[in-house]
Length: 164
Length: 164
Image (tube, rainbow over all chains, first blue to last red; front, side, top):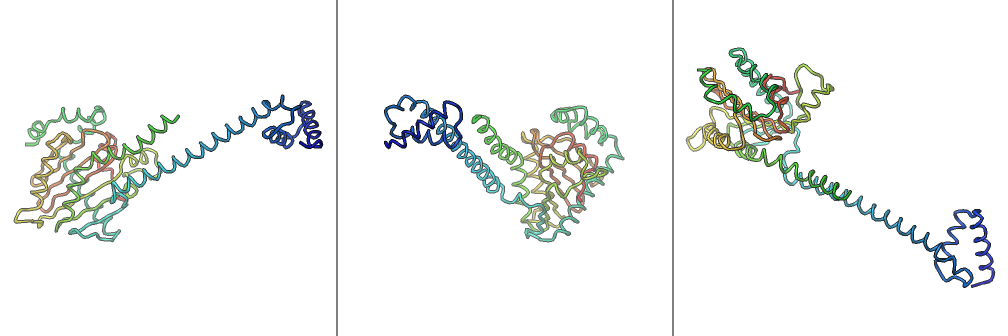
């Protein structure tokens, strides 16, 4: 160890214990105490190495967190892949198939879907007018939360008796 | 922390599987029949749906539409015949098997002359709300997939669900 370095270390230690060191100087001290230390400074070695170990531990956790972030990304990617592999055709926002042929005509698909929904709504409306049954069903739907209860209350026989 | 994340990831993976399992049987039937002649199939994502009498920014509308994952329509024309047997007869037979099983509950069945309207819902949530309409000219299955609770049932029964 050169005398000039020992002198510099002593100076830095003095400044350190007077709480006058900068962050850069403290880093220099930690670097010095990581390596071979002059006999006269050995007593300070655990103090600075303790900080070094603490820093290494914190940085280790940071590295682990970074790894974990990648695990999350990988899990999300796997989930997306899994969903698309499992349900390959469900991503379509609109799909029309006529006679087994995929027809790429958005307007036609919407028009056909609209017709079907309107037909259903018209049937529901007609049956609603003819009988108060569906209104009752609506009220029951609100009053009875478990859907199973609907099945129990309105059995098929009861329905058919009322309608025939 | 790791346990929580693991539970979240597992739930995210298992929930779509469970939802898919609920609707798997009906989707299998629809997939098979949409390939036949004189059969039309339309698949619509909820982004193309609207609730009658409410705006698209309406919170309750958003909430209701968020429960629907997909709407699928299968329309079998009167002329659809395969092996000398009308397709609607074989389809009805397959559906009956499904409906008499454990998965579905019949909520309503109304007949007006030659028109028949039936409504089924899966016993478990999330699931499928299925309308089966039969007229002399055609038979249609309108199936709504998603978190089918009473608000979705009531909206569908009141004819509020429409195509944009």
